[in-house]
Length: 354
Image 1: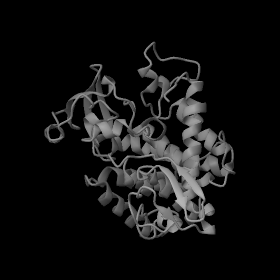
Image 2: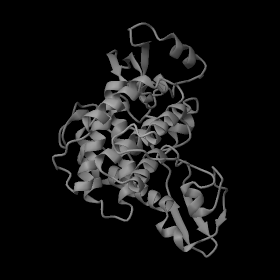
Image 3: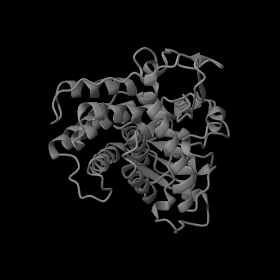
Image 4: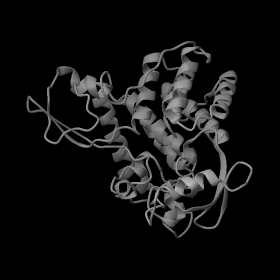
């Protein structure tokens, strides 16, 4: 999914779940910032303080740089959560390890991840972790059928459009990417098709299976489950019975997912923010922004830098507000999420990935 869903739809779902404007803004910012947190390493301050962070993205949603993509271990915990074949812990989908890694929508692993986030909601970075968790959760719908490793299961051939006819446009674009043996990484073989909410399309996967995808249907379902997850977060009960999206708002979301058809995610995002500002949803009018880097971004407010990429050995001015800054809390939540997924959750399903 792209910024229109991870930021725009997440904000809408958070407000409809019952969060106020400020909390929903934090959740939505974090959900999108997972795709924009590209720097890792130690932050050094002028008073001797240090802060360590990891990255959750790689600025490669340009699939031409496959080697660079493969060098960053962000795909599995943040973008392609393994699905274990849709089975519970202790069960195996097959003798092939890859079948455990393939992403499945709303898998038991995904549900356990959401449950852990809810149970840890009292942490200082609770809302920030919720945003990260929602990013990973909804991506299980968009990235279903693909795995966050370099494997032939991710291959895609005979690409078709919604009418079952060869998708010449996508095939022509792929020819210009000069992809090599590294192509089967994530959904690189179909570029951004899984992430665009308005598309209906299909392909034949690396096992010769014909796959039909209906993104508007899948994305709407993801929005509904995301809203329920956030309602359970507010209730403090991962098993609470909750209503989900109000029917009128669900219809509005469905219409926008289907009818905002710009290929550029940023253009679609602006249309979602405009709809929010105009009061198209039952929570009323709201002015929402997202600034990932540069002046007035969370990073700028925490570190005072407008740079996209940190310079090596750079020293930042330390301010007492840093410890409670949204940028710092996001990175705290990122590390907590990463550790839990890799060292606690996936091993319960017999999955070792690092």
